[in-house]
Length: 446
Length: 173
Image 1 (cartoon, rainbow over the protein chains, first blue to last red):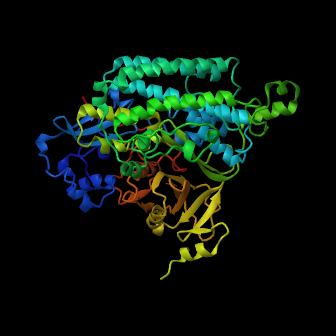
Image 2: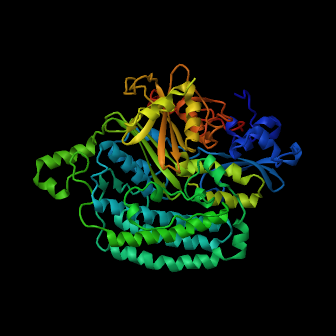
Image 3: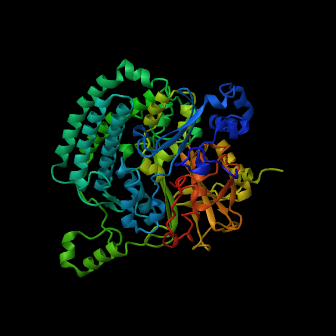
């Protein structure tokens, strides 16, 4: 490795993780940084010509943006090399919120695991619970036995969660770009969705409601009216957003052509979700590799054309509308029946049974103390979360807790687009770019 | 020399047991190919030419407590297994590539030149498991502090036995 690395920013030094000044980086390394991202050979990258003249050392400076910066959405720290206001290079430094959740997962039983994964992407907790539950069910071999109502309930919650997550994005996106009123509006609408979650699951966030085998409880009385109220209340508000932002010249000037990504680059970087779709690649796991009952509902996969921040904003705004369209269909299709499978080895017995059956009581006790054993195996399950593909890779050794549990966090991978999208943009645009990637640091750092 | 893998694919209509010349298994309906470390980059390249153009995930498993686990014939079990998830968007299929990495030589060539998006994921695997990726442009810790000892997701890296590590934060005042 590099041997001695001098800490240039004292007090917050992270040693080799930091971006090194130009004088310490060889031309080859710089070329590799650019060329590999663009998928070019080094010779081709050299002919690009957008990094020809070596800026003088005294013309540039490296500054830290974050980890305590309001527009870095948490504890993201970016080291930016600036020449005046122009960003020459950027390096995200993460890990400030790392709490070892994948290690923790190895200590928690499959029943408790949901409480862990739900805290990763705290803006869309239900998606994380869903992918974890689906992976466990696949290992158990019960993924075909989940009752219809449970499947449709999961879809309902997942889509409402996509709405709340995108509404949060709209709020923060507006705030980052100076439309401070938007922050209040987006938060207000999101809160209405969260109020529904609170009624259903008991909590605004970190629900642990979708569990292996089904859900924790049935939908409460009057849930249909609550959802209808959401579906009636939110569309006029979205139209307000259009007036406030979409058609507004200042908004468009701030976003259009900022942070452009091409389809090739997006795919090379492993990007998924709205960022990939903004480049024109129509890839949505709900449509292309359907899970739950997404092949029974109608919706459009929204794609952009330019791959810029405006496309990403517009896609998320309209995905709220698409999600509402799906929710409407779910309301019509919601079957009656059980909300979890009746498998006494996986799900607890109904409460009434515990009063009358000793056996049920024992099963209940065993499930909540020891958990249930899951057959040996290795599985990878992926779903389309609000930010892209959430994958869950579980290795079981036959015990009651995973031998290894890994979540593929979309934000973590999407964050790699930052250095690429920020090359050559202004520092004010850097804020727009971070915001349009919509990273959730709880998921990036886990 | 003719390619062996092409040959077998033509002759075998039953579920394939190998792909790109490596043993292929089905796990819960998912294709898993076990690759030798020497052919790792070559196979991922062959898969990319075959349509698996996106690398979605790189992670690893430490099988310290299960060194006798089931693997296809001809695969030599090692302590670490690096798991790479590939996606073919046109064919709408996935492929998992499992590579065995021995305890005494914890290295693997990088996929960075093929899939630049593996940069952060390989750094994470290095951070968590101590697997070194040869040719990676910036193999530093990504989640843990730079001066951390050990690799937390290794099975012998017990959280309870680890003293709390504090970091010097600049000159003493």
